[in-house]
Image (cartoon, rainbow, N blue to C red):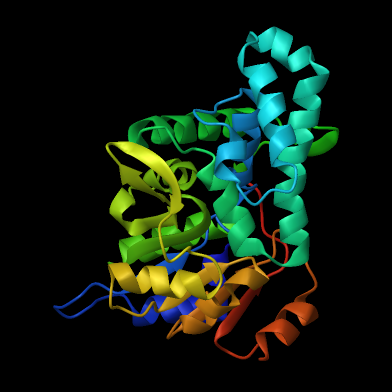
Length: 300
């Protein structure tokens, strides 16, 4: 059954068939776990490590890392190797594990904003166009790969991404009724853009973590606000004064954004997380303003 037949969504769409002259209404979507099954920001991080796509040593970027000297030494050894020799090197496995552990340990400790910004900062030294190219490469690789895992740094990590039918149908229905779709993601902007340009959503309405630019190159300074948790609302407000009439996400981290909606809040439970825990965290109950998609459909 299509999500468009849900009674709350059907009523919402019927109420928004036509709009008077004035600003087009907006709906806002998260990306990872919401529009796609997968995580494009993490996938781009994994691909960067696998292919050693670094213009600067992570030791020069993560200045607060307690093993910074070790990172610098491993990077120096690996930078002089060819790709096949580097992949077979024990130094590469150690290097990959240190980088992965820094990200996942910060996530586990609750430092989500810093963890997500830190992995984006590793693209310092690239031009914005080069970063967009790497984002497109990641998108094409993830959507052409079978759903499975990759081995990196001694860890089994996800590989492959697919669109989620319910969100795809919502984007189509909203666009057809004159809504402007906005995207606010905690992944880097370059990895998210290819997902949504497929729906005709222009880059200026796609918000993700981005880096400041100096002399045409990305720096290691993340632009503020970092679009995670309440930062998603702040980032959206920097681009538009309009309040969304619908917000769609899968994550507890997006509870502030969902509650910011003046209309419907759609939870896509693609990661099969506990719904009762979600609403305890939100400090609210699933009333008529919520639509819960507990078993979303993955498009092949």
